[in-house]
Length: 146
Image (cartoon, rainbow, N blue to C red; front, side):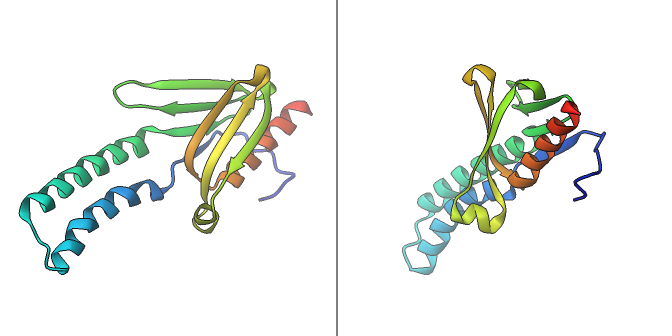
């Protein structure tokens, strides 16, 4: 990324694909049980139903949750049936923290915590490329001060 270049268009940061891993792992439990000879149809169907419902829920979460970084503000949006939109002016941002586990570092995802004036905190969980997202926010903040 060219540090001297000022970006004018909004940047959209999305969730990481890792959110789909848990429902898929739940589906693996009955499959592994079947390979071990412990196959019972009702257990398999229960785990399969839970996994499919959870997976669909995560797809909806993935599609409708994102962060938009604009030259004057950061907008956090989430929700399908109940929508939540949080607008944070860049001038009100005090700090941007990133939480990443070892797995998050390897697969390049993490939680982005934005602390606003007055101590208000907003978090985007499992966001892809959190360091890049923070860099874009900081770049817009520095451009606004110039």
